[in-house]
Length: 358
Image 1 (tube, rainbow, N blue to C red):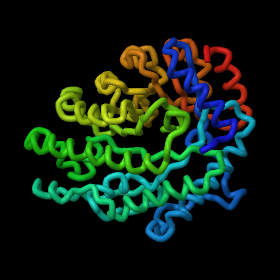
Image 2 (cartoon, rainbow, N blue to C red):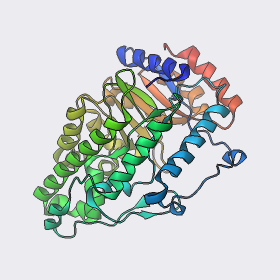
Image 3 (cartoon, rainbow, N blue to C red):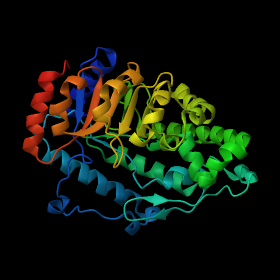
């Protein structure tokens, strides 16, 4: 595949970012999640997930998302931005386990969910990596459509995968939190099977999505080699002891298989951030900005210390950048930057470029 100059220029910058571990490198992602624009002007306003028939409209859904991404890129073309446009299936979290469990996916306005399928522990035997599973087939169809229709202006990503804990939680429901104490061996069995399913899905989708310049784009960042997206939301609800006993080795199993990973988790889990960061060969760790939780941008020195050299991703505002720039310069950082206007984005990006060594 060939890509436009915009993408290739940013890939080169990320290559340097990962090659050099010198603190003071700050890259910035201004993306559709951090800068809202009015898509109605292109007749591409929000279309809720529950209006789509994904078994019949998988290609139409991805076409809609591709067109929105292209509109975003056109609207923000004058912004200095390290955002790499990438497209992947996004149908809410229900699909993220249904490809393994066969559960019915319930579509809501802007996300999806499933009911637990493991009511008795013998139900584990019903889980299978099935190439004929309808949601697995839909995911493959979506990825293939993106590959077939791209014009060099976006990269095809795979899926924002569950981590083993998130997968086990979806399959077993919140009874899993009791099982940690009441049925620990069954939890280990379920975690192990979950990690195998995550590896299988990522491998199958990557066969279609391909790679770019010897790497992949995950969370709109280019990584050398393979770096699947892994969510550790379940871990955020647990203690360090629980993660190290039940989660660590199964997430590490996924990382070992691919030679790296990008991990997302929440500020609710600040207490387990150091434990997640201790995973070997982790390529980047994101801690999100969440309501009623501590703000990662206010704790950068502690987070850099916990990361022990692993690049950190946070989300913050332009105002935060001006206030915390000296702390930002003490590590390798990727900022998901919230802005309100193009003008605000231009000004803060000039400021960041002056203060970053990359």
